[in-house]
Image 1 (cartoon, helix red, strand yellow):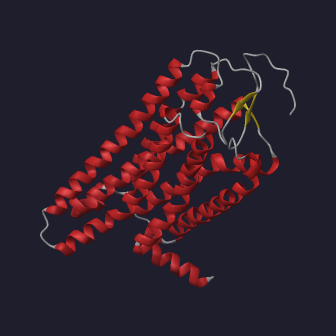
Image 2 (image 1 turned 90 degrees about the vertical axis):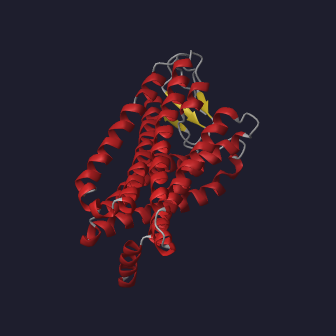
Length: 312
């Protein structure tokens, strides 16, 4: 490995070590990584293509699916290409600015997706609790505005994370035991005072995830209350069926994130490669499963997909 001839407090390059302890298996690990990534790209671009082509799908719910697909593509693309270059070509070097840029776009996309999931919960609430006013409350323009608010919120909250990290002093030839740049891993590489960084990262995560989960829980609490007032069991099933896809997507998004974040901070007894694999599953699996879930559970989208598949 080449030396960098850098000052101890201002390195220009970091080393991403991949999955520590499993270096010999990197080439084999790359097979599911690349396969899942390609499948997720094909699925999400298919959703974008079908919704764009089909005029009947130009509705708020499908606009939300397109927004979800874009963040899925963004999240996986921020991580997987660099991870594969580590696995295939041992291209482990990454500039400090490149590392911080990757971190910014990854966590901005993740925070934006969380905001979109809140909007989807609100969409389901209006569809079930106030269906007669659905078309006037949730228009495509309103959904676009809510999406923009979610994006701006993500950028404003996430931007200080790399800016604060940029001010820290790092040792020369810092080795990050990860496939991508992660704030806690970078803080461990610094010999400076990271209390402000750790506090801001933790508070931001709690505020974003805590607020979003609270709003989602409130939406579903109101949905459940409205559904229980309906006497018809058939209406119960129909109402809950409209929420099934969104509930599955939420579980796939939040559970791995929370588990990975908690084990990274408090799971000192867990092996390092388990931490890293969990963190990678978080950016790999949801983007692949989300289009499948909505494709299966949403009849209009399923029918349009079937039409295009039959043409091939």
